[in-house]
Length: 158
Image 1 (cartoon, rainbow, N blue to C red):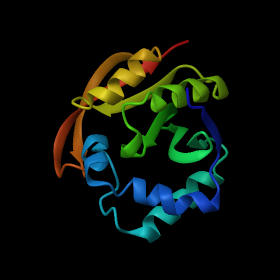
Image 2: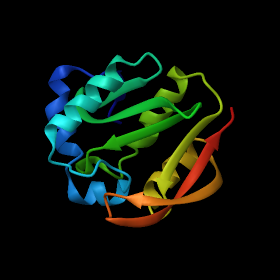
Image 3: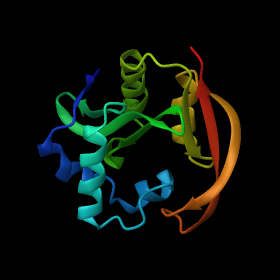
Image 4: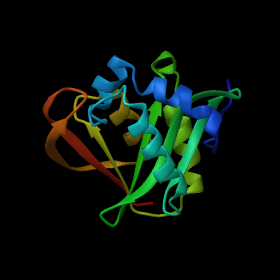
């Protein structure tokens, strides 16, 4: 089995991460994304902000040493939330689940929260397998879809 690992995001990762987040199908599935996927200045400013924040754990996800995505835990409105993005070429290989398990070992804060578009069954499956449970839903504007959609809110207590 290929090795999934986490490491700090490096400057040399930014071009690939920017490209991952521009993929139209991945943006549609993630749904809640930045409005203009081609605005590199906005992406770079966002990455600089989150990489400098002490309350953010932001990691590159690698598969046998190759960058395949990112995963993070961050504080929003007093809650610690997790998010991840895996290059679509690697979907369906269990990488997100293994990366999430590694992040959960690194980030001891509980409870943890997560959100996913309610029709993003793959992401919901990853979160539920890791022990997250559904605690509610919300409706909000999803730039990746250009419409309001429902998202599922999940929580991990232990």
